[in-house]
Length: 421
Image (cartoon, rainbow, N blue to C red):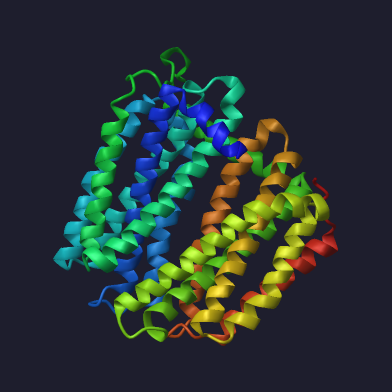
């Protein structure tokens, strides 16, 4: 396979290989920690889980990416990135261990969430640093290839970490604290792996560091504002981003519903519910993978806008048809369909933004994209918390989401297809 051959070429580069190990360990630990946090909030026997608690957990996991992300680069351009990986992962190991202690100690929920929020906030700096460091370990001719394969490998590592967390939780130890400590150990391994690289290898070059931090932060804020203004003059990109934001909202609302169904409606024990949740998430992930395979051909045939319309229209029809049964098998099928349509629309949206936006604004537009993507998911969880009954069965939520999907398809068709091939 071509991808395997490309990866072999990159792995011959010693410093790229070492940076990739840091990424795999860091993101694998993220997957472990995030699953442990989710299962503690949703499946702990001593907790009476509510949609509001799930919404709070999602806010902790996602909002730091939105609030800190646009400004992380300013600080990463001032700090040695190797040191960010070292001390960032050490700090996360300590904070994750503290989270485990809080889980065992029966402390107030707000204190637990503060600890978890700190872990995910540091994560934003580590992930941004991994991307910023790539040009220091890969030559210009291979940079595009590295940018394609390295984040994909990190995503697979996070998925594997999440799977490992499910296995440990179900088989080795019925304890979320034990799973969190496993994540802490992986963070320590990531910190140790970073020491294999020279202190100054990953930059930034001291002579290129802007002298005034306040001016750099203010410039970032002004740059984001300019990016939004530029987006308003690019209707194709603005339409695609709006459609993707609403589809992410729908996916988030249905995720909360499935969590509640797994916890209360489909199982009599926490372990059974956790196994069903793992199955649903795995099947949805398979939908993401299939979307990556079929979207290039679909966009070539339908155009990016046409593929977004097809994804939203398919979800509008199949989501209520499968979801209104509130039965495990149809909803697992729905998880696959929604994984495919959501990721398919995202890939098409990325294509539209990359092709419609001027090169000098792409970074800022994608920062705005990141904020919209995560805030939509958290907002969906908050709305679901207001609608869902305790057992997760909600006809109004299923029908509302179907109407939103239909509205997305209709609006995209009415306003004009985005012809990007």
